[in-house]
Image (cartoon, rainbow, N blue to C red; front, top):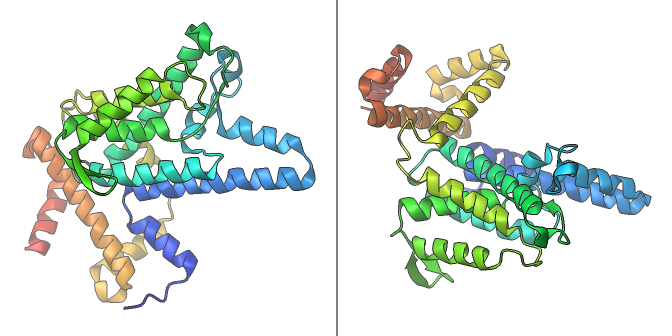
Amino acid sequence: MQSNRSFIDELKYQYQSGGMHIKLIFVNAVFFLLIGLFTIISRLSASPELADLSHSIFTLQTNFSDFIYQPWGLFTSIFSHFGILHFAFNMLMLYFAGSIFRMFFSDQRLLAIYILGGLAGGIFEILAHTLFPGLANQPTVVVGASGSIMAIFICMAFYKPNIPVSLFGIIPVPIIYLGLFFLLIDFISLGMNDGTAHFAHLGGAIIGMVASQRPHSQHNFVYSFERLLQAIGNFFRSFGNRSSVRVAYKNKQDPRRMKDEDFNLDKKARQEKVNLILDKISRSGYESLSKAEKEFLFKQTNKNG
């Protein structure tokens, strides 16, 4: 059946119904468009100050004396790309790695590793430019999601090393071979002035390796960061419109009053919550559930049964 959705409605639907890797691609795309807008306006208005402003917002300064005046770059840079090829390649890798990752872990875990990998990559670049004189004459600006994507990819390579992936779309090889190949290339390229932030890649890779070890244990640091992200998300969601919550709840009682898209999104959200509860049971047992979680799981089980 052909969809009657407009282009904007289609984008909204894809964002809402897609996994976390899709949402991250959308966020990266928004950053890319903002950077492009800054660049175009700067050229047309002959105002280099706008280009400088764009760099100060979206890039990471690896020179520590510059970084302390622009610390937000440690976060914004992991969503930012200034070149179309850089953006396109990274988003293809994010889609590929994220699709595999979501076969075994939740969207919340993917987001946690994406952010931690990006932050670690940025910190590694700052430390490298501070400690190694050989990098003194190299560019001191880092940008891109490569460290974050490396964390996701290496996590899967070490967690499920024998997952087959198609090299060039033809030759099936275990994912660990690709992971080790990427690590080797970055390692032997350290110190080269090739425009690639190899220390950022390795920083992200280390996060991926650590995250792959006993990933469902509460002692895994990614688990704690994931809970922190959930707490932050819940805090901001608490400011949502209460009336919209009541309308959504009312519609949920009668699926016939909902559009097909809304019903599918609601069903997907409930299934994701069930998966999180089941994941908690597998880690800590049924008794670790709160009363609300037990009631929700009971209702969904009866509904699906």
